[in-house]
Image (cartoon, rainbow, N blue to C red; front, side, top):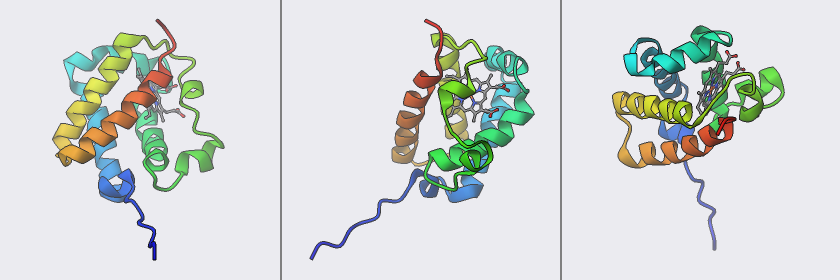
Length: 133
Ligand code: HEM
């Protein structure tokens, strides 16, 4: 008899809501305080500011990682490209965003395999947001 095995979601791997909240908090703390992230902080000022992104990134990532779909419930979609179309994002911005996420993941102290899987997903997602060559 084949018993289906349910794979644990990344949301669960991160420790559910609490883990996702912590990662998002550390990520934006880095954006706001790390001198290397200055360009990214300034990009956020072209939109609704970092405080707004802290809230909506939690809502988005929660669903993106396999947890509750708060962003979709609120806005009716979770289309990353559309969310960023008013922000000019080139390869160096994409790479900076990912580098900040690597730092945040290191601070959270995720298991290597979870960290690698998360970065694979986020790397693909970040390329979706890039809208400049
Ligand atoms: C590729 C590099 C990226 C850059 C440079 C970037 C930059 C930004 C900026 C400047 C904002 C603020 C927009 C505003 O306030 O109007 C923003 C919002 C946001 N970003 Fe990114 N982002 C990147 C990648 C990502 C990725 C990979 C994700 C998800 C995994 C993501 C999720 C979000 C969300 C959920 C918001 C809030 C959208 C909303 O206001 O509804 N971003 N991003």
